[in-house]
Amino acid sequence: MSYGQGGPQSQWDPWKPNSQQPWGTGDDASTPDWAALAEASETRNKRRRLLFIGGGALATLGIGTAVAMGVVSANGDDKANRPTSSLPADLPSASSTPSFAPTSAPPPLDPKEFVSSKAKDTAPNGPDLLFPGLRLTMGPAVYKKGAKADSTTCATGAAGTLGKILAANGCTRMMRVTYARDGIAVTVGVAVFDTEAQASKVKSQSDGKSIVKALAGGGVKAFCNGAICRSTTNSYGRYAYFTLTGFANGKDVTTKDTAVFTTGDDLAEFAFQQLRRRGEAQASAAANS
Image 1 (cartoon, rainbow, N blue to C red):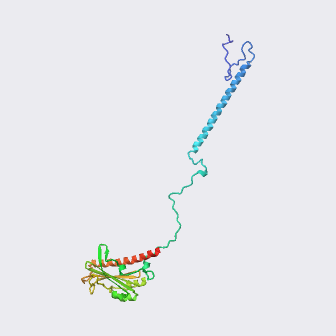
Image 2 (image 1 turned 90 degrees about the vertical axis):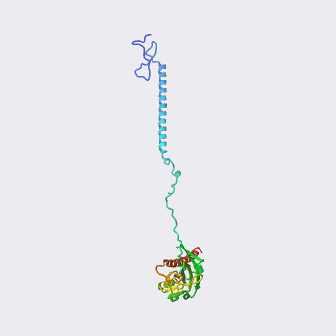
């Protein structure tokens, strides 16, 4: 079959430029093929609809991706998308300093106050209470207890100038106890007054001749009768306390006799401790009453 000049006629494609439109077949070449035109128009409309649907899907996918990215970004800090009411309350710092209401606790009672006046120093007293037991241990030394004496006539327990000093300051009681160890004897005396001021005056007015009288008995022979002995005087609260230490065989004491000095110091220290404990016991009882 001959297609005219130059070969076969090209098929018309509505999507290709310069393509020939088939206006018909047969002898009437000038009459358009309306059926073919309608079919081509329908095909063209279908392609447009497909493109529209595809483009819409791509747009929807892009929006969904953007939303997903936005959520992931916000989830980097989960507090960012929470309402204020759902956020945790601030926890107190572990290092915060607790606060306490001010208190008005009374100051502790002074033990010395309870042995400084007759009005407050009301606990039972006596040589067996101040110097209990049959032996006294002070460090490595153990002293055996001898005689004891207790008198309201203070001068009976004093020697030298001490009697007059005790009387002048209102002494009401004199208690004495003797201890012995290794040939050394010591008498410790405790004089009682109504006030601390009276006891302090006795201490300040005493001199080298103001001594407590040595007390023999209870296995301890007389000592410090005419011999040189070592004496001490002190006071605590309303009490003045004394020691007189010497050799049981009547030997004079010299500054080289350190054992004599140690014995006197031990008994003076024990007397002080006992008087202080007396005050502590009464202060504790008053605080708990």
